[in-house]
Length: 249
Image (cartoon, rainbow, N blue to C red; front, top):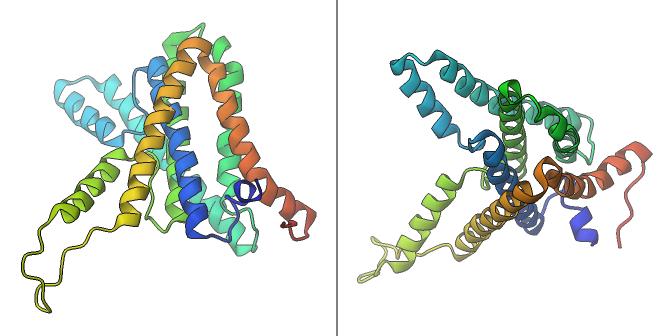
């Protein structure tokens, strides 16, 4: 339990990075797949939104271009906010540098879940607001794990993860027929392959849980995700507020 509560501390270990990445991949999968049932768009898929902008610029569908462009800007804004919060906390030597963006994500998810049923009465404008909010959350979260892991881990970008899995599998299957000093053997990174598989699996499981939750409970299904994020980010924040080291077992 102590390790779980330490996951958002500024002091990092490889194990805490892996576990935090897995939990955030689950959250991203849940929000991404569940949100699709609300706005019919995968809000972590910036490639798709940029392609949508290009297609509809040619077709003259400028309203669609504006919506897709708004999603890209919202995702970018989320990453910007994470960077501002993390660097602000680092300059003050706070333990909660990575917890602050996750606190904001948790609060926005709770707000989204609490008022979602009411907003659903006017879908003409609710869909656009929901799309922007979810894209912002995806950018916020992806930037957190990117900064935590020095850009080694992503939790919303499965294209890159699957590409890396393919690369490592290719190394694993390669036949090193004549290894030597001029031709060093091609060796797969087993630890990296396991991490990538974990992230992909957690994103998929989160997507299943998120889709099922939205289908049966609607917007309120994000509340457990928000509470989980709160449980992760509050210990270092409370430690900073109390101005004393957080006790360790």
